[in-house]
Image (cartoon, rainbow, N blue to C red; front, top):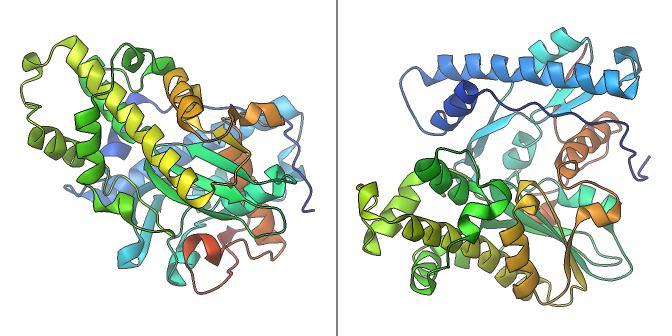
Length: 350
């Protein structure tokens, strides 16, 4: 039903380093990318199948009891402006490995209808987080998106810009770690106000009005390198930067996330009574502290509502699979700018 979903169990598997590197590499054009993308998708789906098996074992549920799996895949290109969005996935293989029907490819129908294909979660947020007052849900993945929930109104939401994508890149480049654990490395630095202004002012996407969506096609290594160079930072000679300067840049990238997010809340949800945060960025203590001090209303994580910060996105795609099965049009034109509501996803029977 439209009721609140119950979480029976959860599991997660870390991507092997080689797969993670290949998925990042496939965000840009390269040699034999069609073949490499197909192989990466198969590898990804083998991990999905392991995660499904583990989750079902923990929940003491048999595969025959499951109607369908919602499998989003890994976004490697997102160009709604050109009429496409690409998620690496192998739904037929996932159905074969698990013996369970699969629903996948959730974004393409919305894009076909002239929409951004993202974010898809606001309609799910509305189902589980609606309150008698205005609330904002903030999802901090690679990219950040917000959902504005007002009583008796349909949800509204859009991408606000980078969440972790630039911080993860800078951290990997200078510490060798894929992300800044708890935000501790960046927390030791101080944001550079001048650099922050330069980052904000040099990117016209920030000033665009919603609906809008973005991804690594825009906020990538080249984007950051170009702006740091313009600001007089020699990115090609890591020796020219002290550890403190590197951490100051990380702190500035963190503040960029908090600043763009806060601006969007002030602009589109000045009546919000609270902000609920989910996604990987909710674990970055320094980022949470920034948001709590900058937002016009109290900020807490979705844990306070009984749904873990790491569970919201996975639940959302399970819900989108449910919506597909039940003929519920989950595409939301108020969010994506599509021509109308559409049933999202495609079905691979077991």
